Image 1 (cartoon, helix red, strand yellow):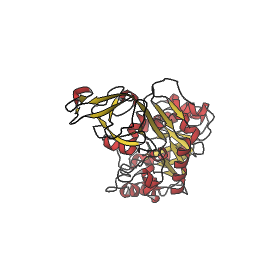
Image 2: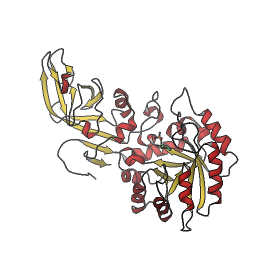
Image 3: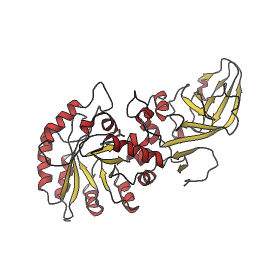
Image 4: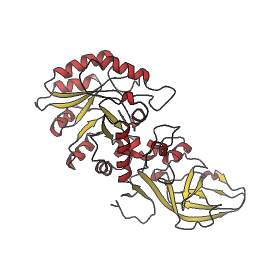
Length: 361
Ligand SMILES: *Cc1c(COP(=O)(O)O)cnc(C)c1O
């Protein structure tokens, strides 16, 4: 399923089987929990429906935009769909009733919309406790009165209690305080509970509860800076390929690209690759960022431009016009590229540009 047929050699490949494999890893790691597949941000840049189809065995989906939820319903998905930021107005809450979406309630105004509903159709909802991230969620006090309102609302059928950890991926900080806080304020309540993102799912079994919320691990990337994805048994779900479209022979002192930020100290061959920041490749990736050419690792040189980047071919005498380039994927872990570029794999995946053709295999 190739989205368009441009001849420009850039192509993203989505590996359905790797997504499925990673879901199995999540299930093995949290055998007693149900798995919410987090597919916000167009499924971390992979394409909402591409991932929803590959992960049709997920127990639920979690995302942000109600439009995306409606697209899943229109495509025939019947699982629970969680709106992680809840609804943004009353009309959206009415839509949740109509197509059975499960909004998160994280602030009091959302409860007022609940009281304004007239349709008797009951909702399945989540209530979020702020356990120290201080982004979304009720304070402990507000949480107790919110739970009472939800329990007494004629519009609410099922309530799941949730929180989100600020530091599940940071071994020095961890989740113990946040977990203790959540337990303190929810242990007496009979409702199902959901706490763990990928990092907590993999590292803290005590946080699994009834529902885990797997995001980045499904896409084959490690949630931990210090542990490579392969060590976690994960397989990459996205590969970005292009090709060499020009070769330059630099003499000592010649420079390449904008601002002449890389200059050759000796004669060298440079490959120009049809991939730039307008394709989603990070512009701030510095000289030295790993790139594969014909299956051999080499390095980025100079500044990434809008449509192109340059790679070192000095030790790749076989490389020629049309040589295959892997920017990240099965041979080159996206986490390595992200690290070199001073970011995280999440950002690289989400930034994959709409102009890049996508094939799902
Ligand atoms: C994005 C998100 C997740 C998934 O996080 P990963 O680190 O990608 O596993 C889980 N829960 C909430 C509330 C989120 O916003």
